[in-house]
Image (cartoon, rainbow, N blue to C red; front, top):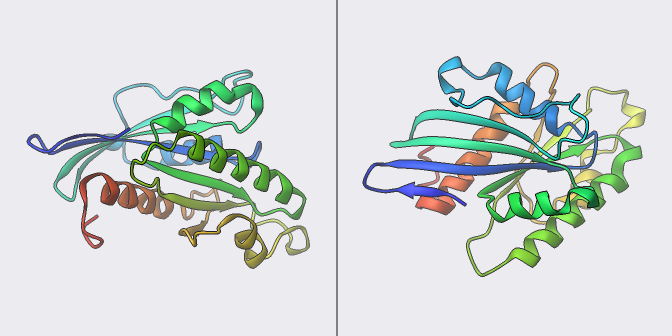
Length: 201
């Protein structure tokens, strides 16, 4: 849950990276951490990585400095959708101010994408207490694979994006599209939390 101090003009946001197994959640965090300017990395050491067996989530802190007049810190958590991580997922999603949903563009992964989205929406509904709506931004991965292996964007969005949320194609190995998606979800979260005007982030 966001922590905003209007007098000090400080803001701390919690963003959750969600998606099916092997969709690229940890890779997205790694792409952000490795490419963001040194001064915008949080003081704490990131936790987790693709090779850490049994770790229930990955975490990356960011200190973005001044964003629209607010000293903004962001905590990014990658949460697995699997049932064994249910307690972790519940805890982190309960604190979420925005969600980056990582969607695997491969045809063979459509059902896994849909299951992950169903798990996310189910958790958000069960946690609903009348507070503000949590913005979702989609990150589409694996689109650099051969076309015959991929879903069309229309099929993917029809299956997952019922609310017409922003969608960004991201090449995680090269970091392409990553920061546009991050900026979009941060801007949406800030508008929810502090009524930031649409053109201010």
